[in-house]
Image: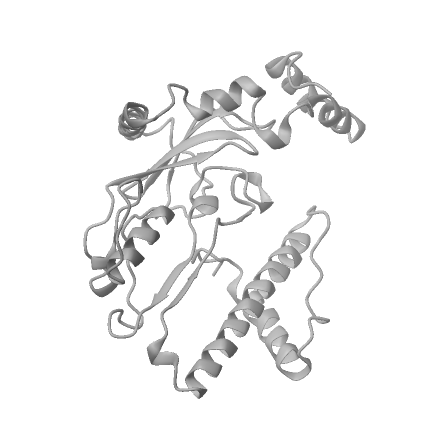
Amino acid sequence: MDDAGNPRPPAGRLRHTLGGRRDTVQQSGRAAAVPPVAGDIRTLDDFGRWIDGYDTGIRYMDDAIGRILDVLAGQGLLDETIIIVTSDHGENQGELNIYGDHHTADQITSRVPMIIRWPGVTTPGSVDSRLHYQIDLLPTLAGMLKAPASDRWDGESYAANLATPDAAGRDFLVLSQMTWSCQRSVRWDNWILIRTYHAGFKDFPPIMLFDVQADPFEQRDLAGDRPEIVAIGLALLEQWHAEQMACSPSPADPMQTVLREGGPYHTRELLGSYTAHLRATGRGHHADRLQAEYGATNWK
């Protein structure tokens, strides 16, 4: 599994590597035997080394959390302690051609782990598959702890889901990215529609559509094949945008502000150096396309 719970092939190879890593950690307590991460991914073997190294880091963290739980159990405190494990974002490992980073508003970057162990409330092994925002955690905790909630919070409590995982969730989520690309996406049912406003010099079409249940690695863009699903996704985005602008203290859409400022923060003023790198590495046709698309803007 990756850090968001998605299956990651090839499982047999990873199990072998991670099992060896666990033995090394338990015996030495040091990280000297971590498989080296490939600096450049040019072959399938390079990619295998990359994934092995990444998954080893996940296994190392899993073992460290296990040791904390063992200490709590040894002190007789485990069943008196609320434990929450989560993260700020996911990490693409080849999805949408992004490796080891989080450049997009897709399922992989936006789906985060959320593990809650609440003695007397949660059931071991139960899974809540409903849609929730990360901002929903705060009102959830406030409700469970009988603390007052602020009327300024945008989150919605999913406290009911802790005891009953199939309780209601949100009908859809809207996801945003404005640092490495400018994208807004809508996630509903088994679909994610990704709308790109500025690709951050990547090869993204304006609209992408993926069935994340049948295609968890986002390899088959169905936007051209399922126009009726695209229409639903765009309508949900428009509905969300209208609702947000109606209650916003500012008349400016943050996405449009970022675009006016020069596009994604981490790609601003880098077109010149990037196209020079492409030409120097034999990929001048990509440089030509980017210069034609972005013109004299974003140049350095």
